[in-house]
Image (cartoon, rainbow, N blue to C red; front, side):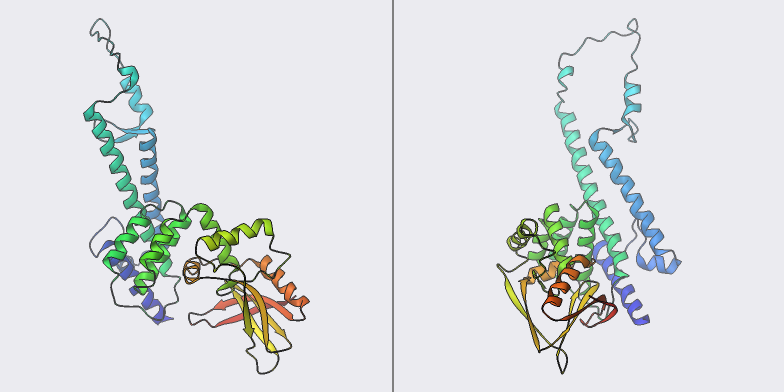
Length: 348
């Protein structure tokens, strides 16, 4: 455990150096948090909250709910409009009405200022998004069970492409994805290719939902459709076609041959995220249908650590039970080398 913790700290420092450098910044670096013995999660939560406040102000500026006053301060538009509504007594000053004012046509100088403001807002938003993802990456490092850490730096071209894509991520799940991609690459440069970054950068919300579904039913590189009480052709059929079109699944339906791990009889474990099916029966092998994940599908799937769909596992387990196998479902505690511990078993 001490060795794992030491590697986690080294990885956190390497992630920070890769993204922000070693100088001073508005956020506390991992080594400064350790030196000051600060509450890591509390500090990161406060920093994320501060960034969110700035992003909210940018939204208000863009929507016109806030504006800059003559001191350069951001204030509520209602307050500024109240001041602007004050007029001199007509006996003191009389100003002729401008017929173009009703059209709200800006002059060239004003238009340039508006464009510059929009560009500045967008640039700051992108910068804040990268900082927010960097903080999420720092928190994520603590969940990694590390055995090795490469000393090689991240490729500069890769990092630039990552920043360009991550800067546009707004939703939390997308930001968590880019944080995981960064941590993986810093831990072992070359883990995620530029082609993978390009794929992730084009994901839509619907495609993200398909990936989440794939993650919840993946059995270690394939999805078994032999669960008639779970899969519905009208619902899941289009999802499989979508994943094929995305390059996550090989076209069509294939089969997988499971071989026994016991000296006598059939015994095998099908792992799915935090759960597993323990299968026992007669013979030495078991053939089941499979939608096989591509290399891209396996790589993308590894980015989303979620929970297994237990309804799917129960349906698959009952289908295998009808074929004469004894089925148990339980918790799976996986290790970095692919091994694991099967516990809390329940027989179907």
